[in-house]
Length: 237
Image 1: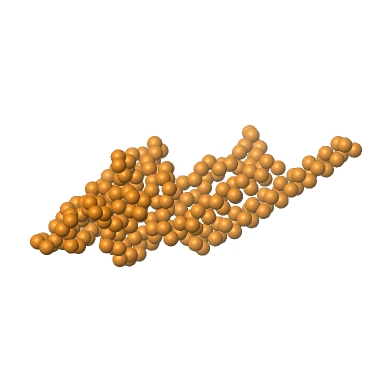
Image 2 (image 1 turned 180 degrees about the horizontal axis):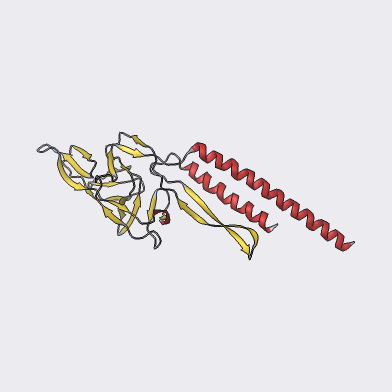
């Protein structure tokens, strides 16, 4: 009974994670999550399964033209560095807007590190190597900053801060900053956003599989309960 009940709990966890993935399928830069499970054993006897957490899947999503004047995407591995006060976080969501002070901020109020657009800028663009160029009335193509991306030894161990933000952990290692645009390395795509890496078809198949496994485990619980009822009646008799 315990083994079957633990299987029901595991499939419920799986359904919740897949449902959350589907709910964020249209969020730029969102990374789907996957659950990790482990056997519960007593020596050589299997007693069921238990959830040992979940982790983000950092497969790249599709890059699409957005038309946003400050939208950027990373073509390849890496993260944008964003800040709020003294706190740093890392994201793949490059949907930014210019604030009155010239900083670029996302919808959650996090500022893109190292970039401030001058007030007299008439146009802005970002090159593949991360150089931020602006056109002013007196000059065109003036470089004002260069985006630096972050990488981690074990990105799957990053801690989710909700939505598309992540923070480093001891297991992920510290952030290593690098300039994009190198040979065979990631580059910046300006005027583009990375869509979520959630596959609707794959998620629906996961839901069907989890529902069938849940139902099979539920039948196991029912069978064990019936066996206990019969044994109890025999004992009384």
